[in-house]
Image (cartoon, rainbow, N blue to C red; front, side, top):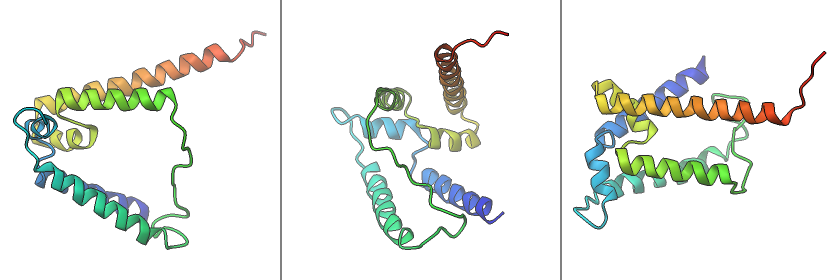
Length: 148
């Protein structure tokens, strides 16, 4: 129960930060990404604040032997760059540049009844399903058929 409460609080704070910083406005994000046109550098402050909080937070939290709301820390262990990671990163960047949304702000923007955000999230979840189906198909092709 405490773990879910911690997640809820973190999600509400994250969502509020996205709203306050205007990250849920795709026009603002696209203006930030348009460095050769009418560039809006204001989101650099948001990026700087996020990196600073994360940097300090990790150092403080990892001094503990275990997390407050869990049994152990769940930190990534892989350090390699595989084609799937590179491809996913490229698709993320292309989608962000075209739509002005990334998943977090788009989910928050659904609360404003934004049709753009709803369509973006529908496409996002369709992509999740497509990748899952492709993974399942690839796994099925690898394992030998077991007919009785």
